[in-house]
Image 1: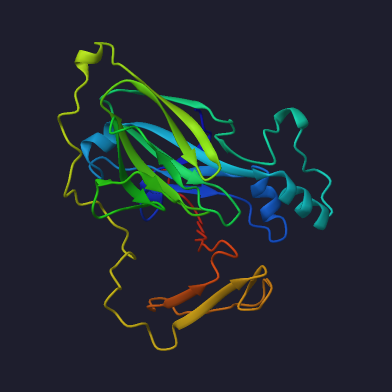
Image 2: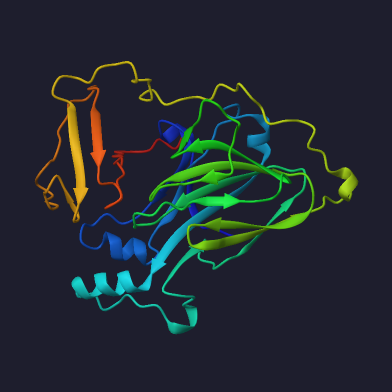
Length: 292
């Protein structure tokens, strides 16, 4: 499964990780993202930043994109757009998910070897991806990172990955025998995983070395533990999402719902996230890049 994505060196950014890009023009973002205008954005690890099995694993970038013809037709009509259309020959139902632009593709993995899945759910709707695979114990799946941040308790063995809209999950996968398994989403089959024997045959499969535990991943400076800290005075707020509004206010580029000072500890209570997806975004301004 090939995926065209942008890759950058860590020295240009605060930390490595799996991210994504999409248009942000309000009023057309849903139509553009829902029509496939999105791509992965990878900030590379530096040597020594991750365990050996992660550094040497085969990387597979998976950009999962939701297509919903009825919604897109409705948004196109509301915005008077005349460009969006799905040709009848490429439709596989009103609502479907593509992986790297492909419908239910096949991914191959060599038994005994690690793969790092960089999963991006480049969706616009409220449903989480709900990625899961049942292999009857043949394949192990360990969470490595969420939303571009390495977790503190890798390897975390789980078999269900919700991955909210705009979310990312880095997953380490290794299988102990050949076989064919189906990876599913909330809409059903997502792609097929073909596990093949190594060149030396089934006898050459070796899964005796477990995933590294207790590894200290580099963390961005802003990612400090705030669980036992009180919010800065005036920085505890509530945000309610409903009817495409935040706290009853429609989008206005000149109106700020909340304004905080740099360095403040903020506590935000969210309600109504089943009505509208919620995610915070970072805008990076770069005056110049030193390529030396």
